[in-house]
Length: 375
Image (cartoon, rainbow, N blue to C red):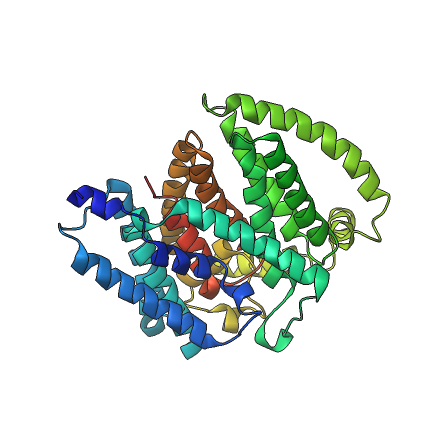
């Protein structure tokens, strides 16, 4: 095996670690402990050292990997330096460990993204979402609210599974495979619609819609995208009429309608506006987790939380990371279904972190952004 081939050889154990990271909140339904974060962080540290030491040649990084890592490391330096510079920084050992987890996980994934077996990763994410669906429909999923578990704990991975199943339309399938795919998609949609939460149903279809729109400009996938958009429009017109007539059964969609008509149960604007006002008063930032002092709650929006904590500089660094991810998205949309999927995963989790979750738990989206760098 050549040195270059070795560096690009898929590493199955590392791929499982990446999967566990992307599915971490829902895996804690089985065993919830901060030790899981520490254990995964130790595994990333091991793989980082292992890949460096075992590489027969110096590790080569592409230009986008270098820029991504530079922007990401600068952003994380802001996180840690802010504890000593900004007076409103809120120190918590638990949060410090979470930020360290973000750093080591995204650093390792971005550096050795070629070692990730993307086909295995995508199939694992689909399978885990289906397992959660069956789990909820059979014995039911019990949530421990004291440990921060909510409907999103299982809703987010099910939504991710749904999105990845929808993206399978870009793959050539037999009639039997199409029937199985439709059954899996139906299972995911049924579980999501009969659960609490808006994002688990909105974001998979929104991400898939973005993928389809982008594919219209791709020679390889243009015909498929056009056919799906046409068929999807007819399908949702028919199914939507039925669902709207049975909103009591479909609780999730009822919340979507309530949001449109009256602001919903937990209007995000009530959380976003105070953050915007605080940022306008000090566009240079207040420090890491400053929302603990400045606001009552975290902003439920990663852009606003970064802007509140690190000001214009932090936002520009984050936008730079997203710009690189978007460039890879544009290129991956011309490739096979698995490259399309890893770019869509980053988009899905970005949307999720703009309505729920705080920056300290953003290991999932940053690892997803790093995956999009795979050539």
